[in-house]
Image (cartoon, rainbow, N blue to C red; front, side, top):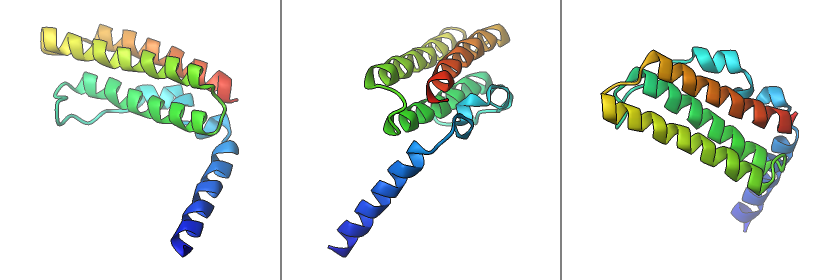
Length: 126
């Protein structure tokens, strides 16, 4: 019973913290920092440019989940943003599978698409 009450208290405090998060607390909203990050290769990702895109998508999807939990996004908005990010991940993987690498031009195109998604998210959580 003690563990149940402690867990419930943690859950409630986590919800309160999520509700109080300003837009600056979402890493996806710092677009310049997102563009500068280097992703880590490993597992099924061997291309460093694909790793960058994958890392950005991971951060964006984590922020979407946080915003949804904080009720700053509706489920439909969260689903749409999440699916668009997943589509970008799939497109990047497709290019790498097809060509063996992700070109700098393709990375720039995916970065612009992710910037747009991040802007949509940040405008809703502000």
